[in-house]
Length: 537
Image 1 (tube, one colour):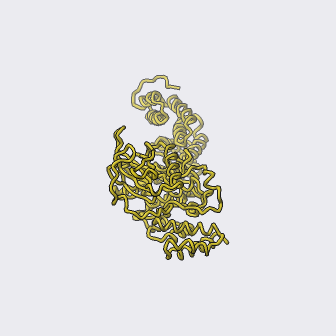
Image 2: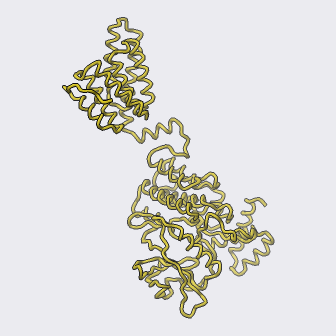
Image 3: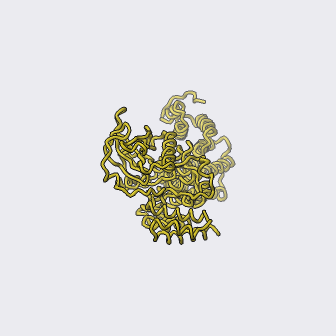
């Protein structure tokens, strides 16, 4: 049976079992699944997802009063219980006070009636994995132990104490504070750092979702609940029996396809990258990627496994730039190989987007790169546009002079006048390399007409040095600038206004290169009536 057909059959049996009382479901599965352990596991996964209302795990079978209705225990271990924070399928999280050191903590406890061997192993694993992690964006574990209630000595209450995070789910926090797109992405970048840290320590979270990411009053995100986390190196016992039904755990809208399928060998750090993408999508667009908030478990699973996320601008209350949507959708690819392979790659593209730089998910065409450059440097581009007009006008005029001028003296005077009026203009070129080529072309034309020792050639070399610096060739730029400035001084003297203009350009460039002392010397010479002195090397 093909994989798609297998899931169709599993959904069909799920819908049939869904209508039956829990006690009758096993006989239906015995009859319909027969020896097909994989089919049965898929149906049981869907039933488990439904029983936990998308927050899934083992069904507990516990039908007693909730923790909010039961009397509050006075103490658990050395901790004085002061309230209930929340309750899940396997136990309760209390707010408690530790006496030494004096501090408030979150106390996670498995209910005694649910302390099965498997539940205890999972609980112990969560403690062990949390013990590996020390990161400012993760709730820290303080202590772990077992509490025996009076009269229930055979029913231990395993617990561990965690840092108490007073905050709100990341999506609620962003909505309440009306965060900008940049502020929301900064939160995701910090989460990428934290999750990448956990991966480096050999821990995969597998339940990243807004409810497990709280943002405190200072705006710091904290990752909670490693209850279904696993080590990057899977425990042998987990994969020992290939026919053993797999238990799917997680939250459907944020679960990767491989996690929903329950294939242990397919689940790795890229499953967390998918979840980060889903959280990022919801943080920006206001809904989950596949719109499964109000779907049945079967429909939700089907959408995640076979459908693409809804285009963000169709559901988002704000415009999502194309580059940003592509980044988020890459994190949400169904195939692990097509996603970002590390959280660092995901965060790097988000950082580049925020900086207005080209991102890896968009082809780097000339138009794309130019458009981003223009967006980053609007004022420079405006000035550069004026410079380009002047450059083109000068080029056309030079070409006309080379053909039309008959009087060599007039041609030289005209060329000299135009070049002197242009080369020292303090306008940044739109493209340093294009500008550099143009200046080199002028120098060749001017040398042919005026001779290589004309002061205009030295002035052109000053502008060439500046263009070299703008194009990133700093070492060559310094050599050309200082040499050209000295040539202008020799040919024209300090009292010539052209020399002072050239000195100002040299000073500006040296300041950008971090050579303050030399720049100061040239700056002084840019002022009128400065006495001669030896220039720096």
